[in-house]
Length: 421
Image 1 (cartoon, rainbow, N blue to C red):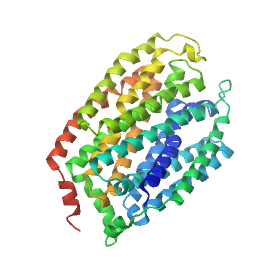
Image 2: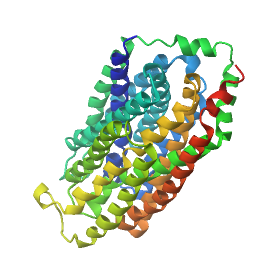
Image 3: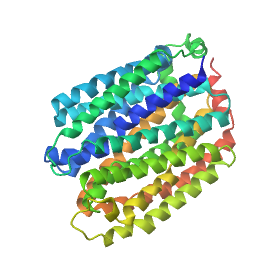
Image 4: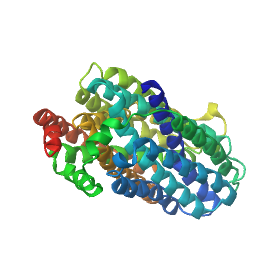
């Protein structure tokens, strides 16, 4: 099995779904003008995306081992390829909702399979941790690319323009390319199939649910939920913040939001190097403290913006450049905690654990985006972003507990989980 080719395929799959899923911030901004709806109504797109991720992950995570990782990923890529070509021909709010539902279903299938496949193509815990960071870095490169892609299709002078829908033709082509690469890439899943052949789907599902009773897994679930709540509350609403609060033009608002994705991508790339040498808890706690400090220092600058409209990059205020740098500090958290929990489980448990990761991450994303949307509507963008300080504080305390439980349990999860085989 060519591990390099497999990893390349996994990275491309993640790249495609990164653009699809995180176009939601841009689309939330656009549909407000296209369909004359409020911010609260537009935020429902996040729910279509994240709830479909959560429900699909919960239902299929225990089936993935039997269906096969490669087959599951091919089904996901096929689904979004078709939807990407349908959406621009219909251009309705209903079809936009269905597009994000399909993207959510596909991503649930992809993420569970990709996380599980990493256990087959990495050789040690440090290799797993580093590869996970690089994988999540590629995800953020996809998010970054998405802002520029959609920015090219936005008409600043006509908020009713539907030209931005044509960006999905490009995404359909990328998804088709990812499908063909995976189809022609050999993936040896014999080890997993050998471990699973004596178990029924019902037993797989029960074992996934049983994972929640482990204290380490339970604390991890809360950590993942809170992290994604923080990330999505900022990422989904940053284009709207840039336009409504900082008075940037629509295309500039979207493109400036890409700084957040670029900083997260860079942060995860650097984390892939740093985490090979420094204890993960030290890295993550320092990063969260820096993120909180940046919110307190930079967001008040939004009060000083007092212009009618900004259309030139040279006129963009400092906050539009500075605040998205929070991504550098948020970047290492998600891949690190995911790698820690997966490394404490045997390979045949990775798809079940990945299912739980995706479920609670999706719930966190929906919760964060919807709360932020309503706070934004009621109290303004500054207050909405100050809200992130609450989950950041809670997450710091949970990470200490997570580390303590990891040291206490050692490999006990692996031992207990496999004792029945």
